[in-house]
Amino acid sequence: LEAVEMEKGQVSLESFAARFTKEEVCAEYLFQIKWPNGFICPRCDHRHFYKTSTRRLPLFECARCHHQASLTVGTVMEGSRTSLQKWFIAFYLVSQPHSINAVQLMKKIQVTYKTAWSMLHKIRHALCEEDASVLLSGLIQVHDACCGKGFNSVNEKQPQRHLFLVGAAVNEENEPFYIKMKLLSKQYLEEWTVTRTGKEAFIRDHVRREAAAQVSFVTGIFKSRKPLIPVFNQAKRWIRETFRGLSPRHLQAYFDEFCFRFNGLRKEIPNFESLIQLCTEHEKILYRDLVQR
Ligand SMILES: [Zn+2]
Image (tube, rainbow, N blue to C red):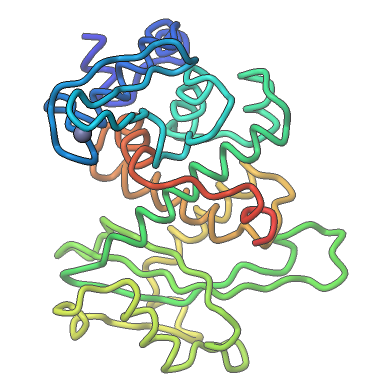
Protein backbone atom coordinates (compact mmCIF):
# COMPACT_ATOMS: atom_id res chain seq x y z
CA LEU A 1 0.00 0.00 0.00
CA GLU A 2 2.75 2.40 0.94
CA ALA A 3 4.42 1.87 -2.42
CA VAL A 4 1.19 2.72 -4.21
CA GLU A 5 0.66 5.85 -2.14
CA MET A 6 4.26 6.81 -2.69
CA GLU A 7 3.79 6.46 -6.40
CA LYS A 8 0.81 8.74 -6.47
CA GLY A 9 2.65 11.26 -4.32
CA GLN A 10 -0.03 11.01 -1.63
CA VAL A 11 2.26 9.96 1.14
CA SER A 12 2.67 12.21 4.18
CA LEU A 13 5.92 14.05 4.87
CA GLU A 14 6.44 11.88 7.97
CA SER A 15 6.26 8.58 6.15
CA PHE A 16 8.27 9.99 3.26
CA ALA A 17 11.05 11.10 5.63
CA ALA A 18 10.84 7.75 7.42
CA ARG A 19 11.56 5.95 4.16
CA PHE A 20 14.55 8.14 3.31
CA THR A 21 16.24 8.26 6.70
CA LYS A 22 19.69 7.42 5.39
CA GLU A 23 21.93 8.80 2.68
CA GLU A 24 22.43 5.26 1.37
CA VAL A 25 18.69 4.84 0.78
CA CYS A 26 18.58 8.09 -1.19
CA ALA A 27 21.69 7.07 -3.13
CA GLU A 28 20.11 3.71 -3.96
CA TYR A 29 16.98 5.49 -5.19
CA LEU A 30 19.07 7.78 -7.41
CA PHE A 31 20.99 4.78 -8.73
CA GLN A 32 17.68 3.18 -9.80
CA ILE A 33 16.62 6.35 -11.60
CA LYS A 34 19.96 6.84 -13.30
CA TRP A 35 20.52 3.22 -14.25
CA PRO A 36 17.11 1.47 -14.20
CA ASN A 37 18.55 -1.52 -16.07
CA GLY A 38 21.77 -1.70 -14.11
CA PHE A 39 24.99 0.29 -14.32
CA ILE A 40 26.16 1.42 -17.76
CA CYS A 41 29.44 3.30 -17.98
CA PRO A 42 28.69 6.77 -19.41
CA ARG A 43 31.98 6.67 -21.28
CA CYS A 44 32.31 3.16 -22.70
CA ASP A 45 28.92 1.44 -22.05
CA HIS A 46 30.56 -1.31 -20.00
CA ARG A 47 28.24 -2.81 -17.37
CA HIS A 48 30.62 -3.89 -14.59
CA PHE A 49 31.71 -1.49 -11.91
CA TYR A 50 33.42 -1.13 -8.55
CA LYS A 51 31.68 0.92 -5.92
CA THR A 52 33.81 3.30 -3.89
CA SER A 53 32.25 4.46 -0.64
CA THR A 54 35.10 6.43 0.86
CA ARG A 55 33.53 9.79 0.03
CA ARG A 56 30.28 11.26 1.32
CA LEU A 57 28.56 9.98 -1.82
CA PRO A 58 29.45 6.70 -3.53
CA LEU A 59 31.36 6.65 -6.81
CA PHE A 60 30.91 3.96 -9.43
CA GLU A 61 34.11 3.10 -11.23
CA CYS A 62 33.89 1.35 -14.58
CA ALA A 63 35.73 -1.98 -14.48
CA ARG A 64 36.99 -1.50 -18.03
CA CYS A 65 37.90 2.16 -18.59
CA HIS A 66 38.07 3.21 -14.91
CA HIS A 67 35.80 6.21 -15.49
CA GLN A 68 34.30 7.29 -12.17
CA ALA A 69 30.59 8.00 -12.42
CA SER A 70 28.75 9.88 -9.71
CA LEU A 71 25.05 9.93 -8.95
CA THR A 72 24.72 13.68 -8.85
CA VAL A 73 26.82 14.81 -11.83
CA GLY A 74 24.52 16.35 -14.42
CA THR A 75 21.69 16.83 -11.92
CA VAL A 76 20.44 19.82 -9.94
CA MET A 77 22.35 18.38 -6.95
CA GLU A 78 25.76 18.46 -8.63
CA GLY A 79 28.41 20.09 -6.48
CA SER A 80 26.01 20.69 -3.59
CA ARG A 81 27.22 20.09 -0.05
CA THR A 82 23.65 19.62 1.16
CA SER A 83 22.79 16.01 2.00
CA LEU A 84 20.67 13.90 -0.33
CA GLN A 85 18.13 13.52 2.48
CA LYS A 86 17.60 17.27 2.56
CA TRP A 87 17.35 17.43 -1.20
CA PHE A 88 14.79 14.63 -1.15
CA ILE A 89 12.66 16.49 1.40
CA ALA A 90 12.85 19.55 -0.85
CA PHE A 91 11.76 17.48 -3.87
CA TYR A 92 8.93 16.02 -1.85
CA LEU A 93 7.70 19.43 -0.66
CA VAL A 94 7.87 21.01 -4.11
CA SER A 95 5.90 18.08 -5.55
CA GLN A 96 3.03 18.65 -3.12
CA PRO A 97 -0.03 20.71 -4.12
CA HIS A 98 0.92 23.75 -2.06
CA SER A 99 4.66 23.78 -2.70
CA ILE A 100 6.96 25.72 -0.41
CA ASN A 101 8.90 28.96 -0.27
CA ALA A 102 12.54 29.45 0.76
CA VAL A 103 11.78 30.57 4.33
CA GLN A 104 9.63 27.49 4.97
CA LEU A 105 12.20 25.16 3.40
CA MET A 106 15.04 26.72 5.42
CA LYS A 107 13.18 25.86 8.64
CA LYS A 108 12.10 22.40 7.52
CA ILE A 109 15.56 21.12 6.57
CA GLN A 110 17.78 23.35 8.70
CA VAL A 111 19.83 25.07 6.02
CA THR A 112 20.59 28.75 5.47
CA TYR A 113 18.15 30.94 3.61
CA LYS A 114 20.62 31.26 0.74
CA THR A 115 20.91 27.48 0.41
CA ALA A 116 17.13 26.95 0.56
CA TRP A 117 16.56 29.72 -1.97
CA SER A 118 19.10 28.37 -4.41
CA MET A 119 17.87 24.76 -4.04
CA LEU A 120 14.34 25.84 -4.95
CA HIS A 121 15.53 27.86 -7.90
CA LYS A 122 17.64 24.98 -9.17
CA ILE A 123 14.56 22.76 -9.02
CA ARG A 124 12.52 25.38 -10.84
CA HIS A 125 15.24 25.70 -13.46
CA ALA A 126 14.88 21.98 -14.15
CA LEU A 127 11.10 22.41 -14.44
CA CYS A 128 11.68 25.23 -16.88
CA GLU A 129 14.10 23.14 -18.99
CA GLU A 130 11.64 20.27 -18.96
CA ASP A 131 8.85 22.54 -20.14
CA ALA A 132 11.06 23.90 -22.92
CA SER A 133 11.49 20.35 -24.20
CA VAL A 134 7.72 19.77 -24.47
CA LEU A 135 6.01 21.24 -27.53
CA LEU A 136 2.26 21.70 -27.70
CA SER A 137 0.42 19.54 -30.22
CA GLY A 138 -3.15 18.80 -31.31
CA LEU A 139 -5.74 21.51 -30.74
CA ILE A 140 -4.07 24.56 -29.26
CA GLN A 141 -5.49 27.73 -27.79
CA VAL A 142 -3.43 30.78 -26.93
CA HIS A 143 -4.61 33.87 -25.04
CA ASP A 144 -2.85 36.90 -23.70
CA ALA A 145 -3.16 37.68 -20.03
CA CYS A 146 -1.83 40.29 -17.72
CA CYS A 147 -0.47 40.34 -14.24
CA GLY A 148 0.18 43.79 -13.03
CA LYS A 149 -0.89 46.60 -10.82
CA GLY A 150 -0.53 45.61 -7.23
CA PHE A 151 0.66 42.15 -8.17
CA ASN A 152 4.20 42.89 -7.08
CA SER A 153 5.31 44.61 -3.94
CA VAL A 154 3.30 47.72 -3.06
CA ASN A 155 6.60 49.45 -2.31
CA GLU A 156 7.52 49.56 -5.92
CA LYS A 157 7.50 53.07 -7.33
CA GLN A 158 6.15 52.07 -10.68
CA PRO A 159 3.39 49.51 -10.74
CA GLN A 160 4.79 46.64 -12.75
CA ARG A 161 2.79 45.13 -15.50
CA HIS A 162 3.64 41.94 -17.31
CA LEU A 163 1.95 40.47 -20.33
CA PHE A 164 1.93 36.71 -20.81
CA LEU A 165 0.88 34.34 -23.53
CA VAL A 166 -1.04 31.43 -22.05
CA GLY A 167 -1.09 28.49 -24.41
CA ALA A 168 -2.68 25.10 -23.96
CA ALA A 169 -3.26 21.87 -25.76
CA VAL A 170 -6.98 21.25 -25.25
CA ASN A 171 -9.18 18.18 -25.60
CA GLU A 172 -12.39 18.00 -27.63
CA GLU A 173 -14.33 19.52 -24.73
CA ASN A 174 -11.95 22.47 -24.92
CA GLU A 175 -10.40 21.62 -21.54
CA PRO A 176 -6.67 22.33 -21.24
CA PHE A 177 -4.49 19.32 -20.46
CA TYR A 178 -1.04 20.77 -21.05
CA ILE A 179 -0.50 24.42 -20.37
CA LYS A 180 2.33 26.95 -20.76
CA MET A 181 2.49 30.51 -19.48
CA LYS A 182 5.23 32.60 -21.07
CA LEU A 183 6.20 36.13 -20.23
CA LEU A 184 6.30 38.28 -23.35
CA SER A 185 9.44 40.25 -23.86
CA LYS A 186 8.98 43.96 -24.56
CA GLN A 187 10.06 43.56 -28.18
CA TYR A 188 6.81 41.68 -28.86
CA LEU A 189 4.54 44.35 -27.41
CA GLU A 190 2.92 47.32 -29.01
CA GLU A 191 0.86 49.36 -26.55
CA TRP A 192 0.27 46.27 -24.42
CA THR A 193 -0.87 44.22 -27.36
CA VAL A 194 1.09 41.25 -28.60
CA THR A 195 2.48 41.74 -32.10
CA ARG A 196 2.31 39.28 -34.96
CA THR A 197 6.03 38.50 -34.49
CA GLY A 198 5.28 37.78 -30.83
CA LYS A 199 2.68 35.19 -31.84
CA GLU A 200 5.03 33.69 -34.41
CA ALA A 201 7.77 33.44 -31.79
CA PHE A 202 5.42 31.60 -29.43
CA ILE A 203 4.54 29.09 -32.15
CA ARG A 204 8.19 28.65 -33.10
CA ASP A 205 9.30 28.03 -29.51
CA HIS A 206 6.38 26.09 -28.03
CA VAL A 207 4.36 24.34 -30.74
CA ARG A 208 5.14 21.27 -32.81
CA ARG A 209 5.60 22.21 -36.41
CA GLU A 210 2.76 20.03 -37.71
CA ALA A 211 0.34 21.61 -35.22
CA ALA A 212 1.21 25.21 -36.09
CA ALA A 213 -1.83 25.53 -38.36
CA GLN A 214 -4.18 24.50 -35.54
CA VAL A 215 -3.27 27.25 -33.12
CA SER A 216 -6.12 29.59 -32.32
CA PHE A 217 -5.11 32.91 -30.84
CA VAL A 218 -7.53 35.14 -28.94
CA THR A 219 -5.76 38.26 -27.79
CA GLY A 220 -6.75 41.80 -26.95
CA ILE A 221 -9.91 42.86 -25.17
CA PHE A 222 -12.08 39.77 -25.76
CA LYS A 223 -12.06 38.59 -22.16
CA SER A 224 -15.16 36.47 -22.51
CA ARG A 225 -13.55 34.45 -25.29
CA LYS A 226 -10.50 33.43 -23.30
CA PRO A 227 -11.29 30.23 -21.41
CA LEU A 228 -7.68 29.90 -20.18
CA ILE A 229 -7.87 33.08 -18.12
CA PRO A 230 -9.31 31.37 -15.01
CA VAL A 231 -6.26 29.06 -14.95
CA PHE A 232 -3.96 32.05 -15.29
CA ASN A 233 -5.76 33.78 -12.42
CA GLN A 234 -5.36 30.60 -10.39
CA ALA A 235 -1.60 30.75 -11.09
CA LYS A 236 -1.42 34.37 -9.95
CA ARG A 237 -3.29 33.55 -6.75
CA TRP A 238 -1.10 30.52 -6.05
CA ILE A 239 2.10 32.50 -6.64
CA ARG A 240 0.92 35.37 -4.44
CA GLU A 241 0.00 33.03 -1.59
CA THR A 242 3.12 30.84 -1.80
CA PHE A 243 5.85 33.38 -2.52
CA ARG A 244 4.98 36.70 -0.94
CA GLY A 245 6.98 39.63 -2.27
CA LEU A 246 8.49 37.78 -5.20
CA SER A 247 10.89 39.47 -7.52
CA PRO A 248 9.73 40.15 -11.09
CA ARG A 249 13.06 38.72 -12.26
CA HIS A 250 11.96 35.24 -11.29
CA LEU A 251 8.35 35.56 -12.38
CA GLN A 252 8.76 33.13 -15.28
CA ALA A 253 10.22 30.47 -12.98
CA TYR A 254 7.21 30.68 -10.64
CA PHE A 255 4.79 30.40 -13.56
CA ASP A 256 6.74 27.39 -14.84
CA GLU A 257 6.42 25.76 -11.43
CA PHE A 258 2.67 26.37 -11.47
CA CYS A 259 2.40 24.81 -14.94
CA PHE A 260 4.43 21.76 -13.86
CA ARG A 261 1.97 21.31 -11.00
CA PHE A 262 -1.06 21.79 -13.24
CA ASN A 263 0.24 19.53 -16.01
CA GLY A 264 1.47 16.88 -13.60
CA LEU A 265 -1.64 16.81 -11.46
CA ARG A 266 -3.85 16.59 -14.49
CA LYS A 267 -1.96 13.65 -15.95
CA GLU A 268 -1.85 11.85 -12.60
CA ILE A 269 1.85 11.40 -12.92
CA PRO A 270 3.37 10.41 -9.58
CA ASN A 271 4.54 13.89 -8.71
CA PHE A 272 7.48 13.16 -6.44
CA GLU A 273 8.91 10.65 -8.85
CA SER A 274 8.45 12.77 -11.94
CA LEU A 275 10.01 15.74 -10.16
CA ILE A 276 13.09 13.85 -9.02
CA GLN A 277 13.45 12.29 -12.46
CA LEU A 278 13.49 15.56 -14.25
CA CYS A 279 15.78 17.06 -11.60
CA THR A 280 18.29 14.33 -12.35
CA GLU A 281 18.02 14.85 -16.09
CA HIS A 282 18.51 18.59 -16.21
CA GLU A 283 21.74 20.17 -15.15
CA LYS A 284 21.99 22.61 -12.34
CA ILE A 285 22.01 26.34 -12.88
CA LEU A 286 24.83 28.17 -11.18
CA TYR A 287 24.00 30.39 -8.23
CA ARG A 288 25.82 33.17 -10.06
CA ASP A 289 23.45 32.85 -13.03
CA LEU A 290 20.42 32.81 -10.78
CA VAL A 291 21.22 36.07 -9.05
CA GLN A 292 22.17 37.77 -12.29
CA ARG A 293 18.95 36.84 -14.03
ZN1 LIG B 1 33.89 2.63 -18.93
